[in-house]
Length: 190
Image 1 (cartoon, rainbow, N blue to C red):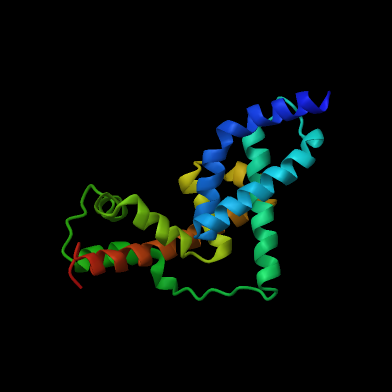
Image 2 (tube, one colour):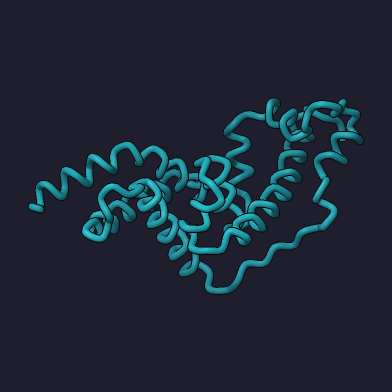
């Protein structure tokens, strides 16, 4: 394959993925400028490694895995220590309990669905961005990129059980964050 053919093929595969990659990078970094830098660095790295890409396989998953790994490498160099997260085990049903205390009629509706319908997507994005790093990655890939547990596990190079655990904990954090947002906005009473 000539250099021009390689460049053309790479660009054809990359173009439809850029929007998704930038959205994912923005949610992970929490900053548009950092996200653009991350996508650009990822594109350069992916182009350099394009010979290792198996044509006919999922380019999007391959590219997003490189993007995520670059993000992790940045974070690791920013802070070499492990990140710890304190969770109150009562957060399992936090949103349900808060919704009942606020007098919401929950019968057929899930309080998360009710709350999500009253909060705009930018605020949900902010709540995702505020998640601890390890939970944020899984939540973004699952909720925003609509990837399966298997695809996420492969992309992050972790067992499926780890994906489930992190997603479970991410949901707990999101419940608290979104309820606090609802209180701030007057959607519900304290």
